Length: 140
Image (tube, rainbow, N blue to C red):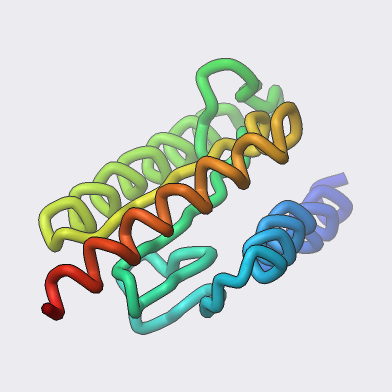
């Protein structure tokens, strides 16, 4: 049973998930060029537009401890409590890093994307457009 659980958990993707792919495609269609899972940036953002200092993180409800949807697994609850707590703590550290360094940070919950994909993409595009305008003004 433990081996089966390990096998199943091993198949969960950490990058290039279906949600990330759909957001990436939508941004690309809107004319935004970006990099995905940039190792050189703190916290490995899912999507990064370095030119405008914008990073996007797509947070899954399970792995990032969504208050509305996270359900503690019944097997090995101590492990999962520590694991998810550390993920939440790391999210806060990453957020603080980008705020302190004057980047535009966008965090999107999985459930928000699933419920309101088009409006979330619109919000992301508006935010990136504002960052682009600020970037141009700084260069002048």
